[in-house]
Length: 207
Image 1 (cartoon, helix red, strand yellow):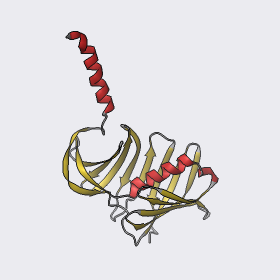
Image 2: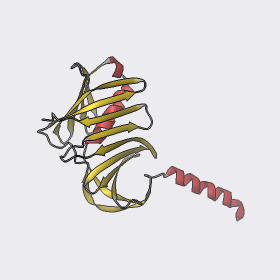
Image 3: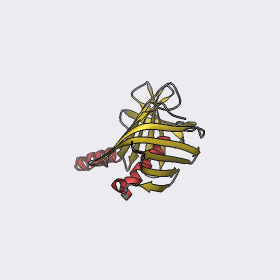
Image 4: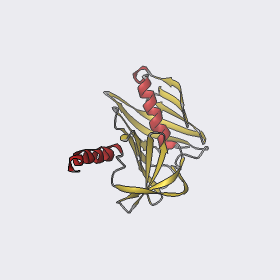
């Protein structure tokens, strides 16, 4: 019987690795439907952020202008300080449409990952699972879509972080700092598997 012990231990370790979970959590529980990520829902407001973007060795800065048209469509335009449109992209719940882009950003993988980040940052979803955290000040909700999982961490009523996983590995993370209104004062987007990071700081000229 003992000769099977190494195999059992190996299977246990393999299983643990294959089912890696969000850090500092101890399982989950089913809950009634709750909407997560209620940011940027106002269709009457155009929001602007000072943006700094790093893509590999390329560094871009300017103003990111965002507008929500309806529950499934948002448009993002990054403008340089001289007024040039660096990228203009319409993002739907399940796909995106590239309106224009400068050559430095005109790579399929870059557009795909930028669209995925912005979609996750702004798209509301409904969760039916709460993840139990060792930090009692946080409430964490999970969304599963195929092999992908997304975790929404709240402190009180403020969304603090979104972490997106694909095939059990973190793909990217979005952190929020709240202000007195419905829009975060700053947002930091960091990709874990691609050299892409975006820093956004709210400007005072939102309409």
